Length: 118
Image 1 (tube, rainbow, N blue to C red):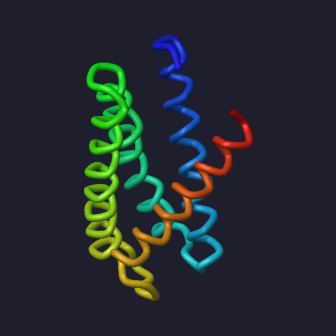
Image 2: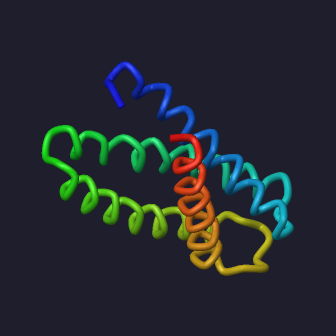
């Protein structure tokens, strides 16, 4: 990936994450206001998780990228879990469990899509 491609990749990452995670949430039974909160939580966390590892990879190498990605994914699970726990109206699933489920789904499906496309 070149620097010129970076904005396009960021948009693709965000849109695909939103589609996957909101799609899974709809399947589970979440609606309207809860979907808006899931959407907004991902708009907050996804750009950070998508961009910082690129910086580390570019300036410090693959090992630093992987470490930063692991730390950021854990922080994302915690932040989104807290948001879901506090703000989702439907309490069918604990917010932290929902965060793990949605993030695992989007991460794994992202890997599959990435493998197919690239």
